[in-house]
Image 1 (spheres, one colour):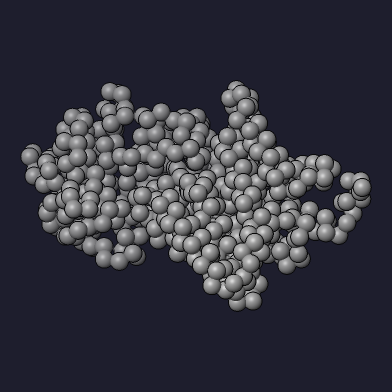
Image 2 (cartoon, helix red, strand yellow):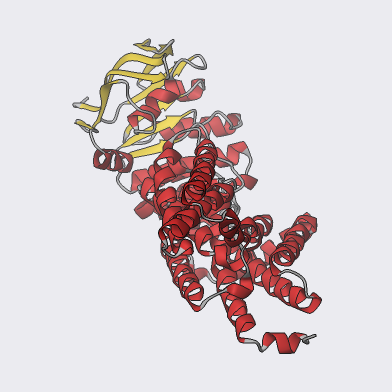
Length: 297
Length: 212
């Protein structure tokens, strides 16, 4: 029996911890996009697309995860035009999911590939994280943060209301396209980390849902999401190792517990937190001239 | 009055097989203020949304400054030329601050802040939109439109801009609109607003007729 410290000194565990930290610092931002676009069902659709990609990879002998990643990106790009419709993306996600799972099962059947091999990849294993996975996650993290911090004004408008964004001169359709491709690729890229069946909940969606309870602006929502992502996944990782339990479910349960806490925080306490932040902003008039003009007529 | 600043030429719009805007023709001169009234569902909002490219045209064209919009780039330019106060004020739970909404007026952000102050929005800059009342939200969108006008928009489309306001607010909005030196097309059932306009048109079952 290894102690926790001994486990943490193992190369595979170190690599998984690094991957998880990079993921927890960036994938919650993708979760904010998912919540903003109201496409929580996207994770199911992308999981099935990833399975189809994995099946194609197993059939052709290419890297299954890479195939899943590419197909996820293509699927995100494919559904982007449907976001302009008043009915939104919910129906499109259902259609995509159905097509993908049917296609995956057909490909697996035709190729005679063992289906359990493909499904095993969907369950994922953090301890199987490779150096390549870390590089992909790191690139993804840079892209996600660069997009958010450079385009956060436009993103805020698009995520709040596409039409308001359009009428503010924002190229909402292009941003929507980028967001959907990025979201799909991010889910695909994280498959190796905790597995598709748990990845979105633990690393993307749960921190974003908690952040929505705590934040009053897009910027603070992203910061809260990253904090909750790092906290939930770090604690979950350590608890799973210490208790010698599977990482994926423990991560999700711990992240879920932190998210649940944000629902239980009394509104008065939340207001106190946000009003203290507002007070700090008022103390810096030079940085926000327009807002101060509004506040001090 | 000069040449038409806004021209609706045989505009028709549909929802599926249902025609909601039927061959509407209306020329609005530069600087003219036109109010559109009519029963719910008569096609008023769809007409203005179509003019901004937010609803597809089934037939006809809408020109602003003599320019019809034919491609995506035209619509982008159109939306910069027109200040817009929407009827459906998005109030989802996604956090957007009042100050961020006002900043979306671009070069007119400061003017939007000034207008917000005039409209009684003092101290609301750091509030998320979903925590505002309907009336406060309407004032915020009006202030943003004032900012867009300051930034160069020569036309204002306003869809029931005073519907959620109290009597004093309605009077204030009517005065504000009346004093605007730009072309205004406003959908309103508020008499204070319609009285301040140069012409009033009425929509019924998708058809438009000028009544005053």
